Image (cartoon, rainbow, N blue to C red; front, side, top):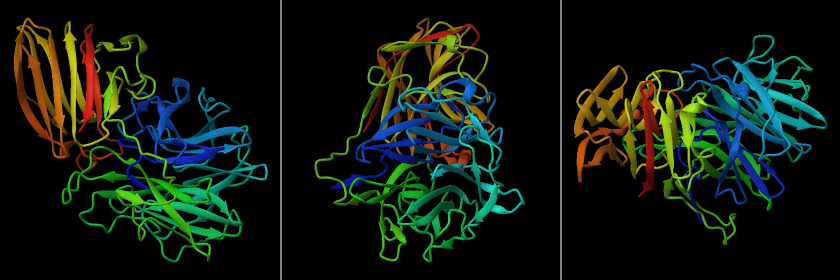
Length: 496
């Protein structure tokens, strides 16, 4: 069977996975967006369905005035003795914590904090004991992967934090995960930074606390030397074994916009790569240690068909699953209905690290046609292609003293420019349209019986290479202006 990568498209970085009976569960980072830490499930590792979020209450995660790419970093999901645990970092407050639930489809607990620094925490359970790991410095100031035993009920440390492995020498040692396989302990990490030098490395030992021997052919997985190849930034992986005994790695990567155009704006996505253990106990991954856009394998049963949703509307998405807010939303500013949404504006704009009236859905592929009917009473309302406070493209209906108009505004760093506008007169309603391709967005309006092209803008200026940070583009609906009200209907995003 042939399957295509990524298996989860769009801004869903830092995947972690566990398996309970015949179902796989996966979580991803969410940074400044709320609800936090989306959860997916699958029965075949190929087709994933979102089922909820781990952090759904303001009491669980502090996101007030968190800048873009702050907030929730790198979760790990684990299952032990009938209970799910998700551990993560609020990078803004520099706190590691975990939450738990006995019902994966229900609510999760309040946070339990662990007094160990670093980021990318991991939990490992064995013989009634719980071990906590993260990157950073241990209690003696030694850098590496720090480990301690904790009381899982309270988060209290039962042993000092001690550095157990310092990696292979690559920068930004992170994302530790521990496994016990065939009597040996395997510690898998990432190094090189979550950009073009990203890589997965690992070591093994006979004790959970080491010493650990590095795999002789590290890195075990990286695309860093594949110049001109679409998939890059491969790393931050988690191992899982299927019912047939096959091993896999779920990991992040990103798709650059062109063979020689080293920009990516869809964010870091979820990839699936086969893993094979040799007779010597070391494992290899992918095609000669690289991840491909597709794999042909007999590990996936022939009856499994990879499904892909191509059209997203208000009617076929769920507000609590597919859509998200910037930081904690002001609930009374949102009226969410089956086929439309009404948004009440405030003085908070998209340029502020606060909570503007905004609800967004991730852009999942390069080529798309996006449209929405917008009706405005006052202020401004429209569609934004949002990377962060300083990098977003807005197509909006706006009111001024002369009536209504549609504007195309580009926000690129310190440059904020209304490039073009179309006068609507007294008409406060228009159909806004965006056509997306790998290299450009085109902005159009259908009003007064005709389509008008306002202009185009390059996708590269919404990329991580330009904007920085760890997120990807969201297709957002927003309203701005104290007392303003807008209604959005007939939303449609077609991937071509």
